[in-house]
Image (cartoon, rainbow, N blue to C red):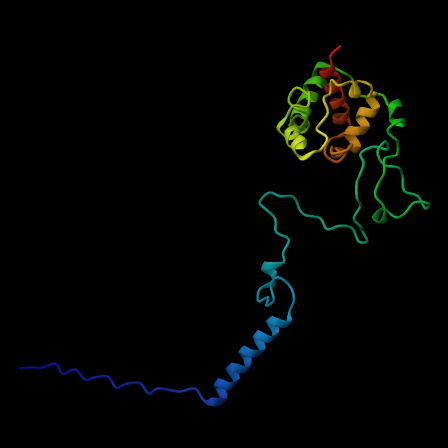
Length: 211
């Protein structure tokens, strides 16, 4: 009768690291910690810097162009000469000055609305008003809105009623000037609305006032 004999495996000899190897590993770890502590930035130890600092783009986004060499930030911009005056040798550099309107509020009274008043224009004008103005001045333009209530509770001057005598007394060019440059708590819309859209808002103001 045959018997299967199982021979137990001999245990593997335990290999202990030499003191020199342990010392080297400790020194490497200490140097890594020291390098991380002495490096500034959001990522002290950049093992894969190309993943941290890259010009990320979403799918179908256009290429992101780098700014021209020597470009400086400029506070304010204009889509027309009526907003900001030209920069000359007599004026400070654009980066050192705050752009100012080329026309004063009084001088703007001579401006005429260049946008023809047509049914299509008025439809577009009401759309621009609903998106950009109704939140503060109310859907009907009479200054009744949630924002106006917040202004009143905070002690600020609330958005104006377009049918008020103060607004009626202003020329079209002056209303355009206010929409462009802002006034009081109202921000400027020069960078948000095109020139013709700002003139369209003037039509809406006159429409609220009635004949």
